[in-house]
Image (cartoon, rainbow, N blue to C red; front, side, top):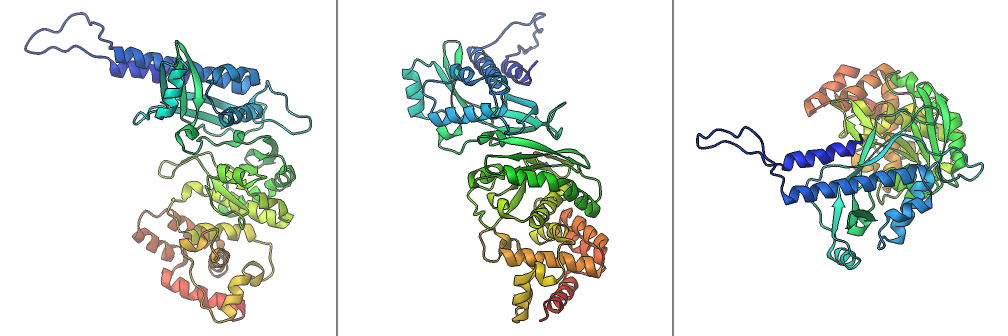
Length: 454
């Protein structure tokens, strides 16, 4: 039984009227049906869209272009049609892949289903009027969700927990048949549910890492980057485990993008300026108290194509460090800690002197500028302060590791990243390094000035 069928049954049960006894009278010995017209309407609506979603999944996973056409409303926009066609071309075993383009995406789970809507949203009047002119008797902004997970026997994948995302769809009814009209763009909002399947030509390669098969995805133009990533991933995973320990999956999904819209969509970075960035980590859901995370991925910008192999290794180790400690990291963890320690792991063993890693910080210090402990605002990608902020954060981590130990650095990270209030944050410093934050800052500044030659 499909999961969405359970949702349909619940609608009927919640809408049913139950006779009760009152005024001292005996309750009837047999129940009577009290299903209202509204209940029947909702049941028909749910069953109809449920069947439509089943046909959609079949067309996307096993069909060809002709199988999508009967599911689309006559008014569906060319762009909406194109998005579904791209999705099908990336997923369907019924659409031949071009020779030599690599392996196709495979999912252990991939299913659209009806979720629960907090409040019903109405189709815009102009769209509703056009549908009525075509003979539609009903329309609905249906609360569709998509459940998916890379993996499965004999195919590339991570065997991850299922990921669920919201992908509302506008649908229209004609007699007993339902058609797909559009997605959120029809409501003048960005299309929901951006995934690996959303951009043309996605292909994947596998890399054997300590925790099993890692997956590297690419798009036309980024295949070379993906191949280099796959070659470096085993060593990068080992380096991250050497610092953080083995209590993380020790495998990952890495995506090499060839265009800024791909990076922005897959990294959920919106309109951020990524010209100075190389990569980002993203996830779909995170629940630190209950120790669950879904949809983790490392997304490389198109600029990663121009990185040397050593710098690409730094980027991979940095981003995989974020993956490794995601469940130990609260969302409000200060960026000097989150970025500084991951940068330390990424850079470890790749330089000979302080200025090799922190040239801007060293130069500023030599001119008399007092090193400043970076704030979260300093890390904005399109900020002139970002490079200095990352170098300063790295230097804090490098100082703690050198002066106290890497074990102390890990303890400091876990203590602050897991702290639930300011008191716990303040207590994390002496617990890890034996001195309070203020004294740590003083010693760090003196160390930076010495390392910079200032």
